[in-house]
Length: 306
Image (cartoon, rainbow, N blue to C red):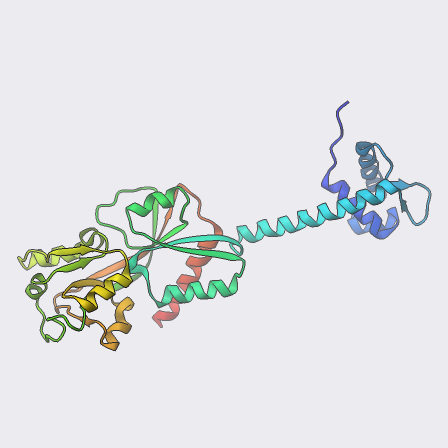
């Protein structure tokens, strides 16, 4: 004969009977009838093969097996309640793990502020930051390695499984270190930029198509790319030490420009801008924490615009 299953409802009823000491009081507390409670306890006894309560006693007394089962039931009910709370918290984005991939162009005080606030607001949420750019990061989005990529699209990208949410439009500036020949020049021209080697951070033609188009419109060959670097600290160091140029988001380098650590060498005819997006995959459902991150980002961007 197959064993009857023990249900969470039966365990909950048993713990409440133990607390109240009578079938009437326990039934009232549970919002059920006394016969329904009696049936549930009888079904539990049948499933276990031993009585749980001493019938005919007032207040209700539990048998030795009933005391043991009540202690177990209390633990189970408590752990189920905790598990439900944790699942609810995870679904709401308050706990769990948030994996964000940041492109070099996406750094700035707004994103740093949002992440700092989330660390304080959600102490049980683990936030992991990695670096990457499209198209290489697309596979990481699709397989769930990262939940969201904050960065620019790339020219010619064809991936219908990516969803782009525009966040902000940033100005891009050509910059040089303080020792560069163009750093002190008042009127830098496009032709001046072509005479010096450049650093690219990823594929500059794909990430900033207007870069090569600007030189083409002026009937100039684009500058020579001398080195491809993905590490921003190394980019800054090479700019300070060498005779190299690069293009970076103005908000990222504004403090260095103000301090004289970098110099803008952007000709007046240049108006390079880059749209920063929050990029998610339609293949892999992002966790709720991504929604919170994007909501906080929208709020902070709205604050910054006023």
